[in-house]
Image 1 (spheres, rainbow, N blue to C red):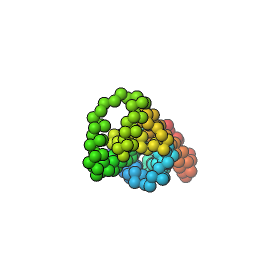
Image 2 (image 1 turned 135 degrees about the vertical axis):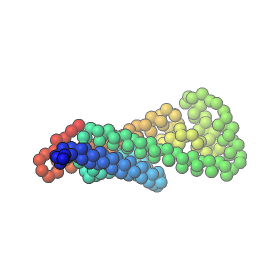
Image 3 (image 1 turned 180 degrees about the vertical axis):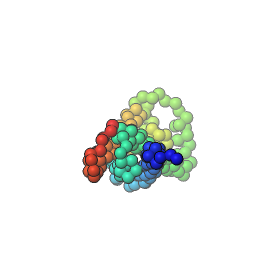
Image 4 (image 1 turned 90 degrees about the vertical axis):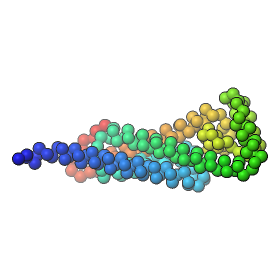
Length: 210
């Protein structure tokens, strides 16, 4: 007859795996929901840079709340790495969905006017060098046609249109910087809240890993 004490480590390990699984799934679903809702918020709240950081902080807060329930004694290093990756995925997912919405609106606007549609097709068929002069010329032609373009780079230009930036490399760099800051901000608040939860937990001080 097996002694109960010998089965305890296996059951504890199983509970730990279940806790990690529950935390990760709920965190993924929550981050996806935050990203999807963010896409359809009014443009006036989507401040360049700050909006991505705010989204990251909200996702990091959610990760910490869920971690306190499902993985209270988990390694902060491992959890933080997962939080960083999930929030980064949420930031990219928000951009992809925002681009889909933007492209659909642009295509509807162009399709509503046959002359604009023909002019846009002609512009897209022209192969121009990737330099500042060509980008400026294309921007002026699109302004004349009445469209911003439908590529992902065009969407990124549209996001920073108030700054007057046209360089593809620059708008891509701004976007990469935004999602990096948002992901790092979310990871930072997660670690801060996770540490506070452990310090406030009753009983002997927990050993902080990571």
